[in-house]
Length: 224
Ligand code: MG
Ligand code: ZN
Image (tube, rainbow, N blue to C red; front, side, top):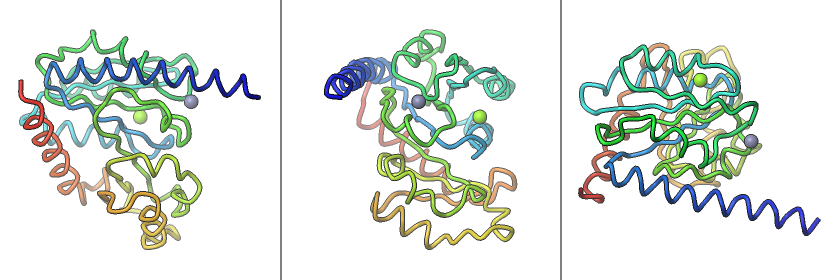
């Protein structure tokens, strides 16, 4: 048992060292990196699509898409006219810093302001693997239920912003937003929270304004 734990700790510490290298690489290029995490089907690609369409005239955006088997998501994003790199994880259920490191040379970092990383759909292990991005964002969605902060506390504890997607269907579900938020507040007090619908566009403005502010703060704290 002790041996197994030591091995896990070694893997995580090697990952953290590589994550620091990735973060320095992004910093040298003046790129803010965002790690988007969620369960499968919560709307990661939809939020990226909405975000790219809204901000592509303001910022130079690139994307990295982690996917177990397909290039479907990267294709959707590349169709918007921004560089998008697919990381095929070969069945692995999360991205790690090595995978992101392999993707970075395939992006025009020096001509980018924002990198959006779509992690593999999973509410467990992505929380344990720092990629070297600067902000972690979790997307929850109404159909998943309002108990997820209680069931996946590690994921909710480690993020800088929380999106609640699919608000357009909330009347069809027993989703108690106050119960959900109470669970979040215990784990991550004051967490920025954006209920929205990628389908209708409702609530997107607040999310986009948060992202603009994060880019501004990052650039001013990281003069080139
Ligand atoms: Mg996706
Ligand atoms: Zn995993």
